[in-house]
Length: 268
Image (cartoon, rainbow, N blue to C red; front, side, top):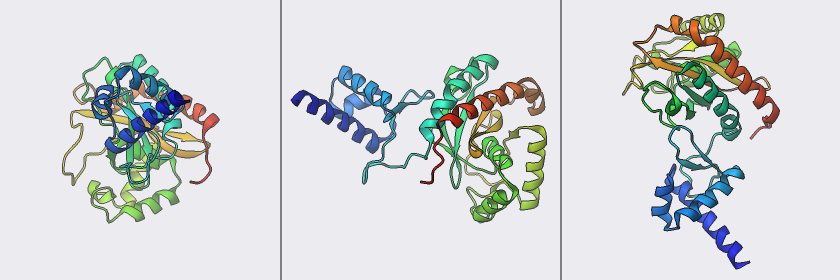
């Protein structure tokens, strides 16, 4: 009994450390807790199996999926684990098929958030993505793909809610509602979205890359998107899409089918 309590106490210490410090490696946890690496590794494996901790593919760091009051820096987006579990193996298969990497984004109220990436698994040298980085609904390929999968009324409501926000809103990309809807019509017709250059940006991100994206959905609800990225010097957008859009769309259909089986669409 004492041994079990000791293991429980150590497991809680790991969770609290992850909640306080954020993403950490095994070595980070060892330094922070003083626990033997073998013990940490064993406890992490149990926590991963119980869906309490996950290890990101992109950076191989551990993150807790629990929120600790007065400790956790951020609340995990609802459905992130289900989406990651469904998307990562299929995004990996896509990267193995076409060579180029994918980013997986989840949709939030004000922005899109990167939850994982296959950049590390790509055959091509692509700058490593930053997990939890937020990007705009109106400028990112995944954000625009999500908008195009929504109803026109939903798009107008989001535009209205964010139109005065100079960072996350459409003004950063020089978009009035009419211009945005024209772009949405184009995205719907061609079957994919591409990223836009920001008109007002403190720092351009991945300036050497292009991206196309399609939405990820479950039971009719738009949850996020999956993109494929490539070096700008390789091909223009239309040429790349002609080669790889079908594979990207099939990966998204497979993700959607997997999510349909597990998605909890109750509010909260």
